[in-house]
Length: 193
Image (cartoon, rainbow, N blue to C red):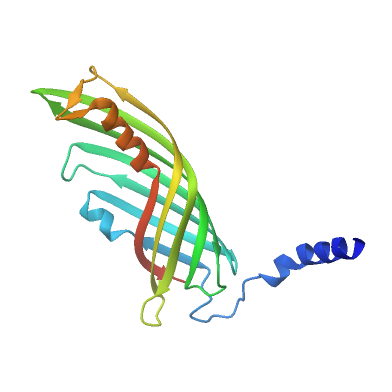
């Protein structure tokens, strides 16, 4: 039994040394990445993110986004922070992660010639999976990830709450907002250095 305890302590004590980031400047050893989400711009959201690999297989990812009224009368912002564990030590690798995100939105919905204003706050904690890939052996890369979390949210109606929004019950509309905010998905393009 003592032998197994010593072996476990030896492995745990040396794990950071085994996963240190190699500081040589190779294409697969970049520690920083700055990326933008071009798909979000088409839907009225601007997202910018940064990833820092503090060890070969471990990274911190932060993202901020702003929703502007492009197709609808909605504006808001969001923030996302993730811990990522990479399956391979290279820059291009698949990963699993834990995320914490927050979002806030304000919007107006017309129902039967009356405008209803609401605001929405959400926090979500969950897990995700994704992949970072290199473009043409350059410093350019892209990453995508999908995940699902547990949402904690609050809906506030400013000038009354409608019974229905179109053919949908208002409670169903609120649930759709709640659970789509708990989704974590992204597609970003950027630069590694």
